[in-house]
Image (cartoon, rainbow, N blue to C red; front, side):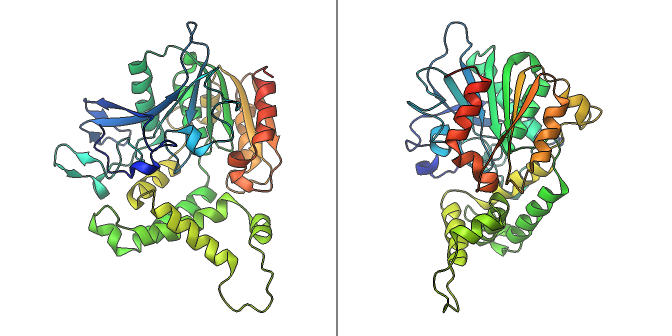
Length: 355
């Protein structure tokens, strides 16, 4: 069992019963040069690998999600949905630095016997892919039919297909980018400032920085949606109000909801992993890096996404051989990939040549 201090009821759609754990008892060297004495990798699988190993779907989760895609993508994954375990072997690993079973800031440092907290290293997306590779080899998977990731899941999918192009037949990158933008970094730094302003974050305790993370979540939500979505869903029908507005209560509710299932230390370090994302680092630029991808590729944008605008996805598609671009029309901004199931069904079916 993992040594991660997590809330079990949020570890998967079935309360954690389907989550599996791999303990890697070797020194794990991070890209920044720091080392972890060992790591845990939490992962969830659905379905079975067929004899040809041509039904493997590797899903990369987004920022505060877990290893269970049925939990965070219920409209797309599960029995009778597009990614049906009766047809596919679906695997998703919780990313390094998160708080759902894989090693993160609240994990026990075996060298000190205490949680890492603020001594956790600055892990990168490449470190997260290094952990994915450890898991793939452990499971004996030799070929991945489709890798799919949205948002920072898309960062992982891009990195994975660049590092190991021979593994993948097809790739789907959704609402993501190849190089983190100053715009995204500005949102992330604003969130980190909120967390750092909460003095309890510096006290190194499991619930440290909770109020700061609550504020950080409010900032993030503004980038996940957009002004049109807020102006419609949070509109007031009482013109006499002086306080207690719907938009205010919505922000508070969402912040409190996250505090119940996440921790500020993982949140802080994952924003830093997001900031350092650059597929061109050490590879002669993003153009050369993207050109290494050999998988048949679909790049999907969301027309109302203000966090990762469609120009980001068009740029990715332009530099990947054998790539096509498609677009979702959504009212919900960046969160559209979590909500627009019908449109995605049609696009994925066409791309994969399925009904």
